[in-house]
Length: 264
Ligand code: OGA
Ligand code: MN
Image (cartoon, rainbow, N blue to C red; front, side, top):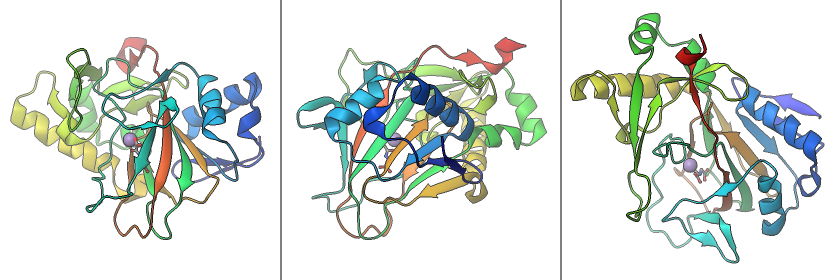
């Protein structure tokens, strides 16, 4: 594959037609996501049916209760600022980390690109782990974070909370990542008081989202961007958006995860 990597994360692939991927491309893109976190595929011409077919090659699709489905494509949801008077909130997060098995991959297909702004920003959670101050890393070894849902209308049958190791082995690369989401969703660190948990989560989040640990994707028509939820945080930057911004989103369900500690 013809690739061009960004620093500290992200890679652009320019020679794959997404309506036409086979097992070799799926394996290649899976490895690229495990290595670089985010794969940008410019100049695509997929429609929603082809987008669904593409994502199904990576695994079973999953949908978050409370999101707005794309007309005729119940596996996809709409991410849109159209008709909103206030911009949507934008905080770094992992999609549905309150599930025991959060989605492995999320993909966005640009439908309408705003005239200005509306970038998507990603963090490198391998690097966040590797650059964590050693005392904090040691203190957190073997601990878990309790992730809870916020801001969605779920039903009684939906899972709303899950515990995940703070340090996890990536299921494909085996490398250790720092796994957390928005502080409001990370309500407790195992074995710590509420105050201590909040302080630690804040430090982990600030560390993860430092400017030098992020990359920004500025959208162009035809872009498809796919990322690996096990090694990146992401957010939309809704500040200063001029014009309509519409994305269609699909998510691939996750498999079992392992604690980094469990490997050794
Ligand atoms: C999402 C999301 C980011 C964006 O759909 O889960 O975080 O840039 N979107 O729209
Ligand atoms: Mn998201």
